[in-house]
Image (tube, rainbow over all chains, first blue to last red; front, side, top):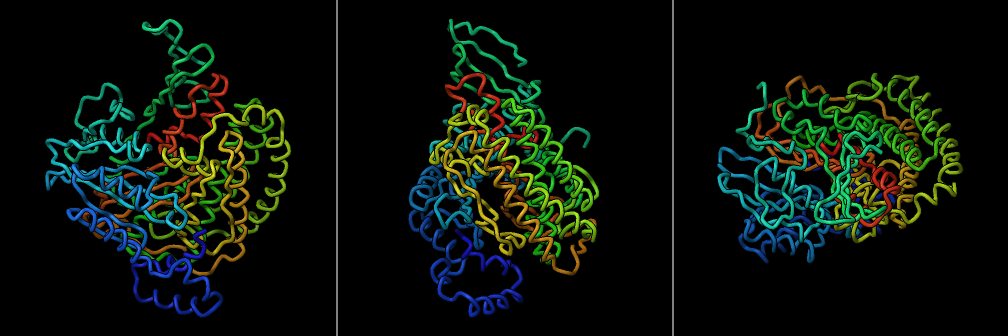
Length: 196
Length: 372
């Protein structure tokens, strides 16, 4: 279905020099007509429109980076549920891809990132990253499994790997680690692997 | 079935049973079951028996040293887990892979897809009591492993797709061998259809067993064969074509039944498309180099990427955070098995105990891949 959108990827975004080359070559050759139907706007415009929709609704949300098919927004634990519901119901991001965490030990912060895709035709190539940051000594965030049900095991994994407490999660027991693990959460930067 | 059972103290007729982790079919994986007679009341998957901390290991090694250990979680599908990693590192470093390297990545990835699906169908046949399928598939799978050996030099863990391209060029005789294998395998898959997928016994064992609706597949985050058997046309190769996938003609097979039969049949249809892609790629392999010279410790600029590819089991994603040092600051592997795991307890509600193996293996779950 997104075959028509296949023209942007060869440009491969980073290198500006060859990017204008293939585009004029592709435009006049076979299909000038179907081109306006699927990608009338260049890809970053789509990320920008999602970003402006989110920031106009939630002014405190910060856009961290955007690419042709990616957008990362940073919000707070108090608003992330509303941002999640908005992106699921209004923007159409209904399919959870992964939940990831990052330990920013220099800033004394932990970050939780929800990577969500979409099942809406034409939007399947886009991944929205909804992120929140919490202090390392009191990492409490609300669970989002009522927004994206599939996030349940991902949140459980993030809980045990980073020690983040997802409030409202039905079961935060160990999923990958041994049941009797009583060390620091292993993916925190101050945990050192044995033998290192 | 290896079980250790105990009677739950608070209920007379609910029995809790532990299936695995030493069950020969389940692998390194346990499902806690609560049974009422022959029916599953509740189930709880218990992964983690083969958790090796790949993500933590990745933070201790540089971007090239990470290559061989990152493919260990999915030895059946080893090229595809490295494919996503290499794309992520390439995106961070702004590498432009030479066209021949992109084609070789596609060829190896599709060969691995077939190797993985053949194993899946073999064991699925075994779980359904279809002995022909396990012998045929395991035997025929070896021809694809042979082809992978001729290209990558190893039989299981190729470490072939690396940041910057692929490790070595394809030898001339392997192109001929690959085209022959494709022609032979097309006919062979017709035989699979007749002996397995049109077999009334297989239909009895898998029709309307473990049905997953389209809306539930979306909500639970299903990907890959599980999603495509439930009417979702998720295919990263089509959705965001990477590594020249837009050059090849292929379809995304989508079935709507959502049952165990459909989940097995989607794998066969996937293999048909994979053969098409391999044949096209081998025929129009562009000339030129296959890799960039990166050096043993490449400099990766600071940044954050989220890349995904279509592995055999579904969407393989990497979240790589770089702080400019030679090692990744954070390396998150999102494996399709772990994404599909949430589907399992949902599908197991109310089924017969005898249907558990078919449903469990039908979600194409590979414990090592999920545990990382």
